[in-house]
Structure formats: C-alpha cells, structure tokens
Image 1 (cartoon, helix red, strand yellow):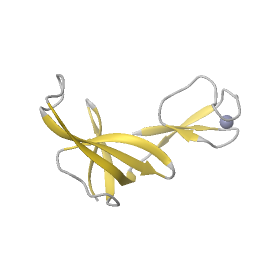
Image 2 (cartoon, rainbow, N blue to C red):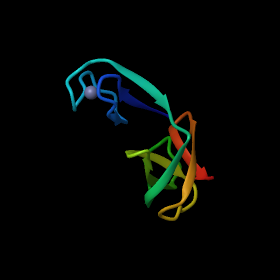
Image 3 (cartoon, helix red, strand yellow):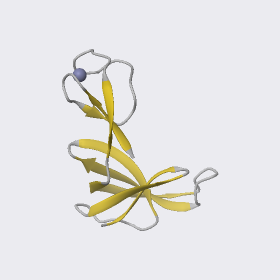
Length: 95
Ligand SMILES: [Zn+2]
C-alpha cells in the first residue's frame, strides 16, 4: 500500500489529490507503508462482489495517517499489523 506525501509541507494522506489540502502545492510522492496500528475493526457481512461475504474492515493509524484495510480475523485495537495487498486492495494481518 502507498500513501501520498506532499513534497512541500510533508502532509500525508491516503486518497490521491491534485492539490495539497494543506499548502496548495501540486508536488507529491508515494510512500510505501507496511505496518500500522489498529484503531477500529468492524465486521462486514453481505458485502458486494468480489469481496468475501464476511470480513473485517479495519481502520489503521500509519504514522498519523488513517488508512483502511481488510482482514479475515477480528483485530484488537492497539495491535500492530502488517499491511499487504491483493488484487482487491490492502489486507492487514497480525505482525
Ligand atoms: Zn503541502
């Protein structure tokens, strides 16, 4: 998974933007992230194709940036997780 970082002010965010929300510049870099801390884990059932019928949507803190990933198991708040990726997006597993 990669997050975006403004080369001018250093603010980080997940969703790509054309203009920095902090300083208004347009110069970004992608930073690979591999680890995060669980803030919240919510079980989803009956999700649309191609996602599994049952999984957890996990909100992570990655160096102050909040990102989402999927997990097959419930992850406790405060747990350290590894962030990997499959063809449907980011997946987190216990570190
Ligand atoms: Zn900026």
